[in-house]
Length: 452
Ligand SMILES: NC(=O)N[C@@H](CC(=O)O)C(=O)O
Ligand SMILES: [Zn+2]
Ligand SMILES: [Zn+2]
Image (cartoon, rainbow, N blue to C red; front, top):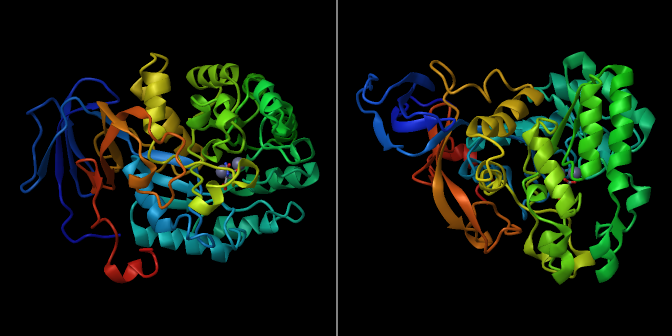
């Protein structure tokens, strides 16, 4: 997207990574000046933003978002989902492949890529499916997707596990040619048939079929060994158990090229929440125990877990507001992720804001191989992909007033710390004063069919 006369901004007194206050000038899409308060040269007509007390971070990057278009535009569209992403402080998202049709060809990934560009809220990087139709039987056109205009580097059958070890091996071998990565949804299908929630004390007490930790851990163990065997890059989606953290820690110690993600919800919510049978808490992998929550926090703090990824999984009311066993798996997350990370990791003293930049921006950008433009340092001359956060604000979450088209947030009615005040995509404000800037989209004609 090009703008003839992009607005320049000066952020007064912003604290990069939570450090000492500086003035930051954004002009021509880059950080044009940065220095002690009152010392920078401000271009004529620059808009002043009082950023005192606010933390300035590189724009957040999500490696795991479900945008639902094509196919389930009743849950979310590329437009609504990326607008929600901007509201949450993101400047780039990776759009998962479990759409209808599946993102398993160059044509479909290019369609999603273009819808992202037209919407203009964040950079959209489509994830390519590993197997045709997520069927788990035949490799998709990985090379064609990599060579397409969408330049796909992340491949995943997310929602389904690539269960066949031979196919997984071939996929790992194939993506090496273009420095791609296979992102595995680690769920042993036979061990999770009919599973509704975590297998444990709570599932036994309330009578729901359990999803045992070993169903996740056995796939991760197999896949790190496969990645070692073929010398390829593996990424573990939404790791959720203490045992999974241990396996990844072991694999990294052995030099295996594996990265892992945890979701915000697995950093704070437990299977105790299933006791009321409210399907808003039904998710894949399931919410685990308090001991697992502690283990994933520890793993994130010590670098075993590389990133926080939202697994934003919007669903329409009719798919969630039903009895537990009939409800869809998944919860929204783009607009609460940063707040949950602040609450669980920063406000508890386990991580600094520089660490937050690492797990929510720098590392996901590197894993997705978009680090030439995203997840960059907050520094002179760098692309102005930035997020300004008020860490002292608190807000009560309300699913009905969120920007996403769906309302299945597990944090409805709870108070969370932190608020995204502004988001900048290449120097253009997509969020200002805590609200999305609706001129962010491209020309009106480019919004055809996207404003649902
Ligand atoms: N996380 C979920 O519970 N659901 C995701 C699929 C997935 O991430 O496995 C979805 O697409 O709805
Ligand atoms: Zn998944
Ligand atoms: Zn997912």
